[in-house]
Image 1 (cartoon, helix red, strand yellow):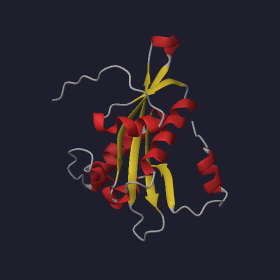
Image 2: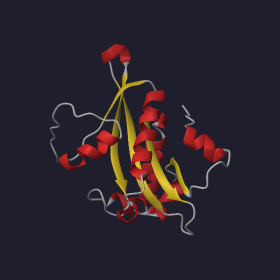
Image 3: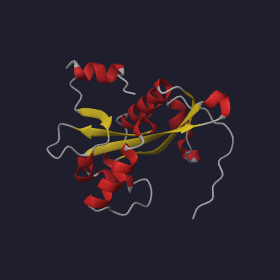
Length: 165
């Protein structure tokens, strides 16, 4: 399912001078610093171009159930990726076969923080989840980021627990 937000419609019509383009991840983003950006969030060893291509194909095969957005600086010669975030759509038996959206892996390059890029990515992911028919969108964050995600429209609910391997 393809969505057109007011932001993307304005960009398509040439109505914006914003050099930051929010779009889906592309295979060429391996060369634009995507993996290095993720390493600012968590442990993320570099992937070879072949390893990246394999994982990209696996995720692309999930279609609109796994959406990775990036913020690309189109004014820079190398068109670096400045921010990213992911939406995973979980198909459930609950709520009559409903869907829940999970926002993951949101990170903005340290040098680009404070420009609203993360907010733009998260809002677009929420919009995609709504358009996909999700009845809720959830995410996990550190206590320090509660206020940030509240600004994105999220409210605190429940307790996160995890088992790591």
